[in-house]
Image (cartoon, rainbow, N blue to C red; front, side, top):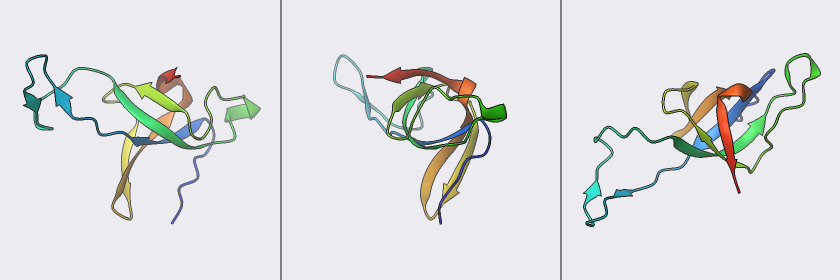
Length: 91
């Protein structure tokens, strides 16, 4: 099964990064973290009203922790975000 975003939507696969403090303590996923999330753009919609979107498939991006909708397809987790929910491209 494949996800195809519509309009100005972007499909992002969140990247899981293990959080380690300066003293070497590993923070489990259950600890509430306030930092922004990172993910890889999987696919991009055709734009709302033929608007050129600022990201492309393969880009690594930052987005807000509570942005978009969580989707699980074939045991893989994705985020469906609006183009405007993408905060930055990581280069």
